[in-house]
View (cartoon, helix red, strand yellow):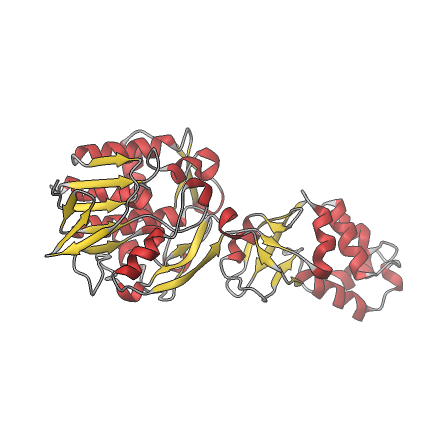
Length: 385
């Protein structure tokens, strides 16, 4: 069969691209390896799909070129996607930090995207294992099907149990496109060495600020039997590289000088007692033990209190690794943005070849940002096909 465009991948970006192109009168074929489309959508947000973030902007994304995402994100905004959601009568709510979720089920988002594809007479085939992709005489051939345009929308290798692979990168390299080395992102970190003690706190969580080499994130951190997780840690993990530290502020609301001040107002209290008032008991006890200030505050020199205060505000862990692609929500890296047009997502050196979504070296923060990139990049390509 001859089509105007063949889209590899029936996830968020692929379906959005297909719907947009189909409704523009293009004859579109979507090929999905899994037995049904949108599997990552269905499991996202605890099954309610954190489908966008109302504050999404270029600053919320990692890329070798931080400017690349600006064009697509400006032309298709969170409000644009929210208008689409509301036009289907899908009820939604805002959780913390601008995160938007379905009131009901993530399935509503998949059904909406399929309905949008149906409006454009898009053909969707599932359970298709794409083998060789050939390109000659201006046409891409996938099996028995041909088209002058091919869209890579197969995502990255995160969550392999969902069928994720590095297929997008292999295909990009076959067409001569560079790939920024992919690594796990939004992933729990593992602890070893002196930090092993903290693994005994498995199940304990606290509101903290966490930071690797990028911005600081104020959310919950969770201790696990392997190391560190929770939203604050997952956010920091996207910026973390092996060998680097992660700094945690266990008391982000305390102003400098709070401990010497506590010494003056309550000299007979102890650091352990103060920490138990602010943090889960097991965590408070562990931190107090490591700081080794066992006497009453009135018997501690101010210098020792200031040192303890500074350590609590920047407690450094040196993870010995992460839980890898198996537990990573997304992938940092991917098809190099230098190879693509930021306006259309088309490869500069291979006319008719496009790459969108997680396959590209644009990675969002936790909280709906990656879906917004999927919608925006899908629209950019869909409008260009």
